[in-house]
Amino acid sequence: MSAQDIAAQTMGEPINPWMMETGSFWIWGVLLALALVWTVKDKRLPLFGLVLIAATSGFWQEFFGDWGAYVAWNPAFARLPFWGEMAYTTPVKPLFIPFSWGWWFAISIPLLTSLVMWLKRKFPTRSVRVLAMLTAFPLFLAYQIYVEGSSVANGWWTYDSVVGPALESENGSLPLIFPLLIGIWAGWFVGILADRDSDGLMSHEKRAGVASKPTGWRREWTRLWSMIAVFQISFFVVNIGPAMIGRALFGGPSLLVP
Image 1 (cartoon, rainbow, N blue to C red):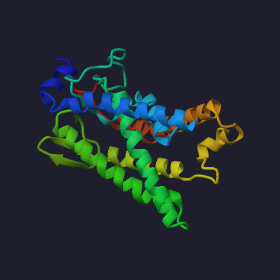
Image 2: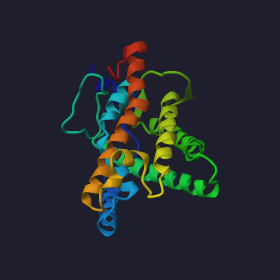
Image 3: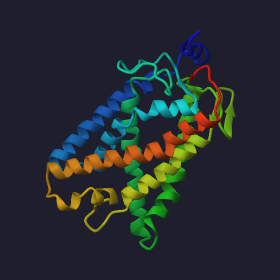
């Protein structure tokens, strides 16, 4: 019996799968349309547009991180047409993942960034990086724990093996190490997005040479590729790499995530 057959028997039919499938496509499309309108109007990519594209482009990391975390997706979901089984990835690769990555980060990260920038104005002597860790980290962590727990309960995915401390329920176990890692990443990432210079530029934009470029599409392209680079590199280093290395060094075999 294949890993996908075992997963189907283990999880059964997912509850309300349209929330992740149809919902992700529509939310992502609306955000893209809004980003295009904002960009044309202001001749400048909005932060949520930058994050939308950066996160969507980084979706490929999901399946490697899932392998490291022993995450098995429900086989009932529609699959990506161009990516089947592959070593060091989870077997089932849902079609909605690029879109769900895009819309979730495009909504959550800019909102948290706005919150931290507001707090910085209220408490100007405080470090913006510290404010981000004190706010974005716990908020993102709490939501991740909620989403992970409800998703396991809905049969959208499951953890075949538990790594470290976990929350136990009748629907499965939720390892806490992975929400903790992404919460730490979110706190750090929001900190660098909220830390602007007098011209409103972020540190990675300054290093990419955005300040030397005149207003226009070349400047916005530099802002975009620098956001993609910092998003993908930081996310892989903090979330994906540790999970893969941890399983490769200390993990055992898995029926659902070979």
